[in-house]
Length: 252
Image (cartoon, rainbow, N blue to C red):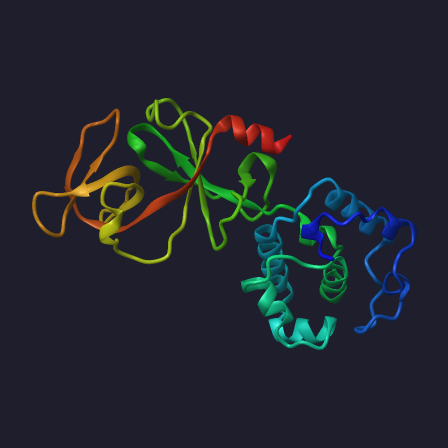
């Protein structure tokens, strides 16, 4: 039975399986603390299904930090060389025991694999839809980072709306997520709201439309004049919008 099936773990807490009590473990490390495991199971018991996208993101982040390869990690926790690769790419559920073993092999508490990942706010969108990038460093504090939106993997860039210049579509405090995957732009982006970098160096959140001639584009917004026939370095569509009110609820 998998966690996604809403397994009742109360009996497992009262009668922990043998591998939890094994102090030797394959790589010679003590298992994650029992209290941490209990806390993690309480988290699982509150939800009928795991957020597999969040687990994948957390696993990738920890593996990169630990410089751990998928095959190496797979062999530390079992006999299948593809266990971790499958988990990262296609597996839609996972057993409690597998999470515990992964945490042990990575030398972290299991709740780190279950934690909803945060991403830094890269900058602000101000008057006229212009993006002002800011460097907050590597510390993901609550006031300079936001929750990763559900179901979206890969590297995301979060931008916070500041002020009222983008009303009524975007409000002060809304978070706009974009995902840079290439330079230039694709034809299907025409008509979409995009983050757009001009060859002159400025970045805007605007609707991307055709210009008056090939190779240039017009940028449109609700409350500012059109920016006609602009040369673009790259454009990428908005992939997710988190309203300010939803952001507050998620942070509670």
